[in-house]
Length: 158
Image 1 (cartoon, one colour):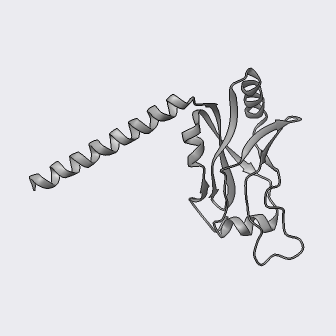
Image 2: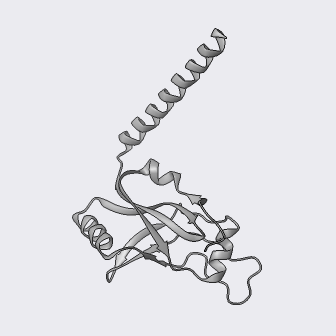
């Protein structure tokens, strides 16, 4: 039985949600070395430059940054190496087919521990155009202003 239960967030990729329109998400396990797991347990990782590609029927996470373990020795890992993702065959085939159509990509959204096992949430995404990004920012700003106005109104009523 694992010592940890629940979900513990390590890193999230907020930039991906801004840059891409998320169509479908998948949870994948990762093949990691011991020093990578220890570094992740310290809560240090970055998915900003990371991307997923499919090669020879296997899914790979590349350019995601997991820093070297501080107390590691000469057996430490390379911080930006490509890491194999563990997905079902049907999921890999579906992702490969969708990315072959064009205009689609696979991006990592977040990395977390689920019941003691390192997982990464990947998404099938389509790149947003510049005006879509501006529209999304405007909607978020309008929503924030509306919430602020409602808070002000509720405070005045008390």
